[in-house]
Length: 306
Image 1 (cartoon, rainbow, N blue to C red):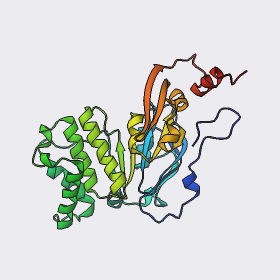
Image 2: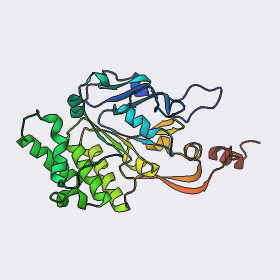
Image 3: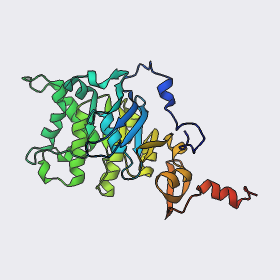
Image 4: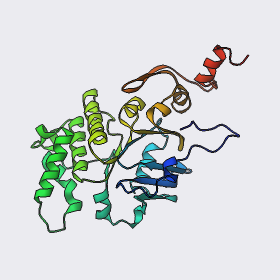
């Protein structure tokens, strides 16, 4: 992993996994190759020619400031936004070659726009996650029931099972929607800012679900998070974006540095290494006249520029 190089240096970091392991047998590998992503109303690409690999069975977190392109990149990977150029591959297969139900059996998505009728129960909502596994006239099976039970248990919403969705708090609804996505029983699960607007209790519950998936399943998870400290705690790999470009990628210990926080998040911060991952102490917001990296300031204070 490396930060985005300055002028005169080599191009930004590439996905080393993309070059070494294309023949991986495990299900759930997700690749975005040279993706250019934009919206009809945008002046230019929101993501411009980026490549990313989400290794099979690992948690990959996309982080960055507002407007960095992380949710747009996730939409491209989820086949929710057609790329202007580039391709998305699932286990080496072009995502466009999947029919709708086949893709839904392979990839689950929890977007920021998740909605459901207020009058249905949580159990009924979670059963909707089983639609890719049934024919048009088929009723639910024992396999469907078992998948729904597992999803509700993992999402920690068993006590809400018979409640109507309209009666739930925002955090409770998020757990129910996560359970629905889990019930799809897919190899890949994409989560777009699942903790946004949640109180601390429900944020922790969502993070614990992701940790359980990481530790006890083979599901490939790609999650967009605003909180880089949360990302560092639950993710195997962190990808940091700014202005539509990937600026750093690697393990949390490699990515979460004082220089990265200064360049991508525009804050000065102290980073402590703990058994639970990097801990960040924000110190101050950086401004346009702050050109020096924190590491360069330390080197100068130690006499490194004499």
